[in-house]
Image (tube, rainbow over all chains, first blue to last red; front, side):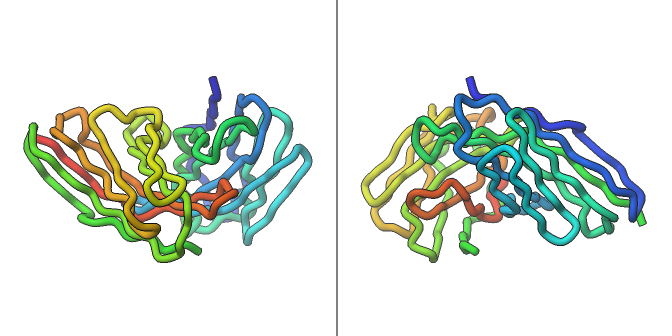
Length: 112
Length: 112
């Protein structure tokens, strides 16, 4: 069974204090690993797709990396506006495009 | 980015009533999905569609149905609402052949 586990569940950072969010995944062959940002009362907003181990993608203060078992979302010098829940999801290379397993998210709070 | 609208944004109904949640996307994405999001669970797939007149059951489809009569819309119907269906519902879409899903703003449904 495909599984995606995110840690920590919640993270509180001071503004400027860099940190990383973890996403461990178990899928039978990885088609893609996805990161989303979700603000309260809104739908998830797509951030990144990673396809193979060693791949990295960046967007402003966020950098996503991928190994064969984990993905990390590194947040460098975060600002209060980075506060949100970050969701990770994985899709196996077998089955259709509907097969995406989501983690329960890491709720990030950045304090000024 | 895909633009998806959902209506209503909030709905309160009674046990046993039929409820329909609307989802409309303007980008002609072939793939459309319905998820529910509950505390402690990742997004869980209810139904999905790969095109007009195509509908498929997801992980938690009992008590729900969808129909796809055009590319833009995928309404979700709760045949006889139950309290266990109190949740936040998200519609998503993606281009054919891709996994990156773009989400709507969600509908918060309360079944009393």
